[in-house]
Image 1 (cartoon, rainbow, N blue to C red):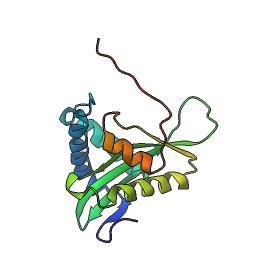
Image 2: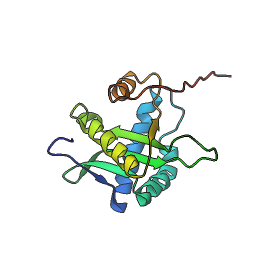
Image 3: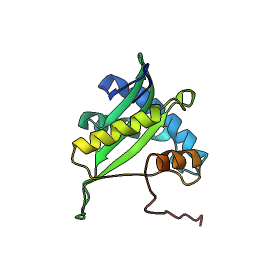
Image 4: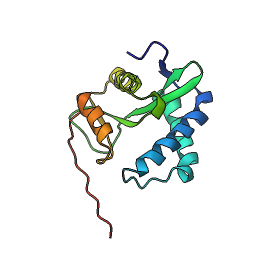
Length: 155
C-alpha cells in the first residue's frame, strides 16, 4: 500500500512528457552501474515506447498531488517461442531519489504485479544492473530470484 499522500494509477496521455523526463533520469542513473543506454539521445524513442505502454494500460505512475514521483511499465510477453507459463515483463521501475525509502517503489511493484496478474500472467520477469546492489536487494526482498545471468566483455 502506498503512503497516504501518494496515489498509484494508470498514466494518462498528459503524463507522458513527465514520465519520459523521469526515464531520462533513470537512464542517467543506470550509467553509473554500467548501462550503455544513453539517456537524452533516447528520450524521443522512449516517449513513443512509454506512449505504447500507456495506450495498453501498462504504464503506472506514483503521484503526489499533481507531481509524478515514480513510474513503472509492464507488458505481457508475446514471443515467438511457446512457454510453459504466461510471462510478463516489468521493463522499468523508478522512484525519484528524494521520494525513496517511503514504500513508493514497493507500491509501484505491487501495482505492476497486480496489472500483470489481471492479464493472466503467471511469472513476472525484470532486469536490474548487476552492480546496482540496492535494486537487487529491493527485488530479492520482494521475492524475486535471479534466473539468468548476463555477461559482458569489452572487445
